[in-house]
Image 1 (cartoon, helix red, strand yellow):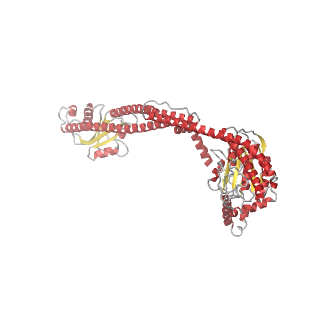
Image 2 (cartoon, rainbow, N blue to C red):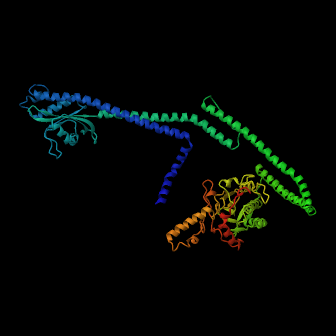
Length: 639
């Protein structure tokens, strides 16, 4: 059911997306639309109030007019009944009350009363006998203009019952005429119980239709609707023009800001007038001018710095070569020196090696800063690169008492990359891991999935403190400046490695926890220029403290459910998180990218065919379990 609802919502939202996008991005549209909606609300409210006032005024005027006419009619009917013998009014046509019948008298009365108000009201007379409930009107009913078939609807039974009780009844209802609407006409009905010349009772009704008032009210409604539409359109146009005067400079400033951000620092706003918008334009232009000057100064300073570094690095090579030659001669003859001088010769040669490395790194950094670094990409099998790096790091690993294990090299890992730069990055990561691993094993893991490949280097040393995973790539940054570098690092290795990764269009990221070691991951696209959407290897390793605690909680929960008899061996039966199924790396998903998942990734601690781990895997597992207890303070960052 939920997928169907989501599909229906998506189908409904799809045609609305352009309008929503325009609403979010265009302030002029929002202001004008809001003005129109508020104007429509005001016009509707004003129209309702005005129409109500007009309706009440027309009703009150009709009521006053009807009251005058009804009073005169009732008085005329009473006088006619009291003086039936006079030759006037209704008695003149009867020729005497003794000879006249009640029916003739009522006919004459209706004609006389109706003659003075034709088209304004209708007169109805009927016997005072209320119908028997079957809906039939009393006999002797006299009327003009009304529809005889619907007279019972015009004068309902409850109305006649109230009149029969002797009160003057006034009520709003609907009257049905012979030539009129099927729905009837809203009318004011006034009835009174009267007596005829013979002393009999009859009911006299005045029916005042609101035909003219409804026409007047319709005219008022039409006028208000036309005026309302005109006012709303006029207010919308006014709002559009007013907002345009304010929004246009803002849009101009936004466009110029975008061009300034793109590097076109000479862009300026056109300023006219002396109002607030003009002051904003002047301030913006001053800001842009100052920004251009500052950026120009920084560019000149940066250019001078890069040129200085490059020149100094090149100029130092000649004296360094001479010093190198002299140092080599001294170093070769150190056996003839006394111990102090011989040791000085060895230290001199070591520091010259470090000086040469520093010069090479400075030259490389200057190339990246100048944008002169070139990528020579070709299809490369990362397994070969990793093997060369591991072989080169074996002497250092043996001195540190560490073993370098390679995982995930059972299948070829082909990528378009500059082998020299990738090897430099991996050599830096592996050497750093060995140096900072405190004698524990270092694991190099390869992975490939979709359009990405990755190499992760995991150590179990002192790790990284919170916040150091981002600063570790800064130039010359060290987590613990007091910690000695046994390999004579320059402090620029990871900075150059990050630039090499960016040159490939890839990522170089770090993870670490105090006492739990660290992991550096290099992610590259399989094809140069292809955007990365994820990494096949998680940034946080599966044997981290958080994952171990999670697995222990799951094991305890499953053990509690299984009972004490089956819970003893349950911890070893619970698989590691992510083992045997695809794992995604949420930290490696910039923007709205979808994760790249691993295919067939095996759990940590298992040797894949061809990994070369053999008997060293058991030793690595033992050292993993004792990593937290053996962790110490030190440099977990720049290496």
